[in-house]
Image (cartoon, rainbow, N blue to C red):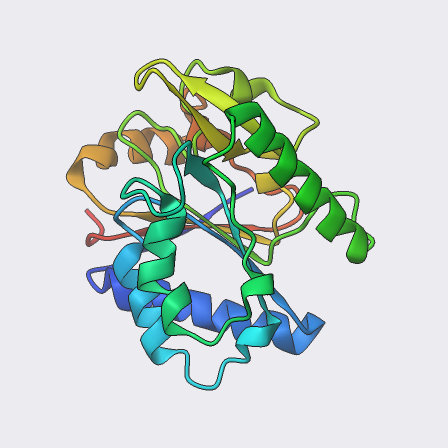
Length: 233
């Protein structure tokens, strides 16, 4: 498939607009908006602007999941959930029952199994073989990893489970992460990327190089968008 690539010097407003437009379209078409949030620093200002500009968005029809999580408690500074809570979730009237947090404080294998079971249960409510996000947000590191799918790690070959615990040697720790089958089941996947250190890898991926984990994000029946926070070169 050919992804949509948007170069922009208005990164935060443009990314926020994409989310808001996607939310309204999904609610209009299916009555619910199911979004997976990404972690790290890049989406934080986007989440804040979304909270501030969503207007009359019916938050009771928004369902939140998380693409990956560090193995830490929810109040830890490294927690993706903590970042999302402070930048978005505490700022909007979304019902707590619509927020599905990865329990990073549990043993890694248990946390992954619990989240995998939770998403399977949610999918059954929609009569889906696999939970299908309306919009799934991703970041990417300079090494080409996305979510917590790092180069050379076991999770890259997972074909059955939606969520796994993945040992990351470079950090000598486990992460909880979505797998390719779940990511690629989404209706729309969007990479949100800034930083000159990522440009070389992005160019290679968009040119067809499959050596990096992010290159294997290819929705089976959906769209793929890359929003890049710099002008086209």
